[in-house]
Amino acid sequence: MPTKAPTVRLKSGYERIRRDWPQTKTVRWQKVRREVLRRDPLCVVCLKTGRIVYSEIADHVIPHKGRDGLFWAMLNIQGLCKPCHDAKTRDEIRAAR
Ligand SMILES: [Zn+2]
Image (tube, rainbow, N blue to C red; front, side):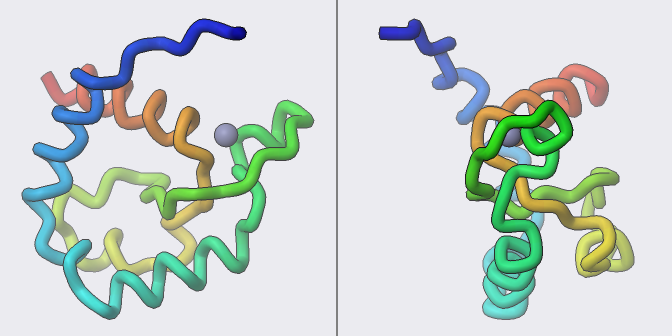
């Protein structure tokens, strides 16, 4: 069994950030998210390294920080698997400190 890195602290940090953006609560976002996962059915980061992993999360390439222009731009959203998304979020949280 491969050992899994603990994600509890990371998740709480991510949830804290997520709560700040009311856009993610909207039906419009649910539709955009579905659209992105349909366009990118495989994690785009894993794909670059030759791994085939299904996308689970619609991720903003450039952190939107609440700006609608970046938030809703389909070109700024990519499909990622959870491990890749968690790693990216961790880097963003670290960079924001
Ligand atoms: Zn991935």
